[in-house]
Length: 98
Image 1 (cartoon, helix red, strand yellow):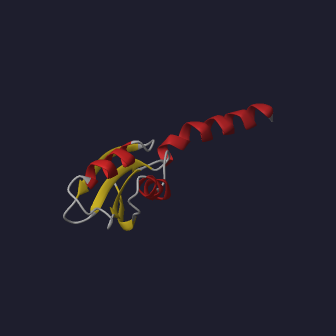
Image 2 (cartoon, rainbow, N blue to C red; image 1 turned 135 degrees about the vertical axis):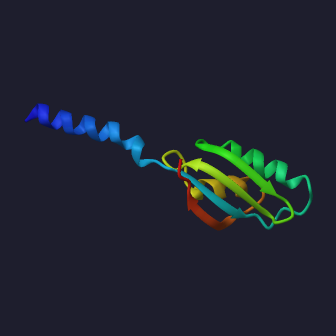
Image 3 (cartoon, rainbow, N blue to C red; image 1 turned 180 degrees about the horizontal axis):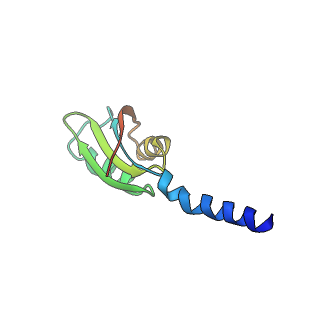
């Protein structure tokens, strides 16, 4: 019984990383009012653990972020921009296939 329980726990632990998937979201960041604002937004998003890519577009007032959904969430991303002085909301989301 004990060996069976250990084997089950071990297989669950090993399979957890397989459940994670890269996600790509686009955040609306309407507070970017100058061409220097994207620098701050990008830096704030890059500091979030699990973020692998950030592209900020000043003209569209948005940021496209690719991240590991096992390490962070959309809420953490929007909180990071808000903490940097640029509140954001989810504009678009999709799973990234590799």
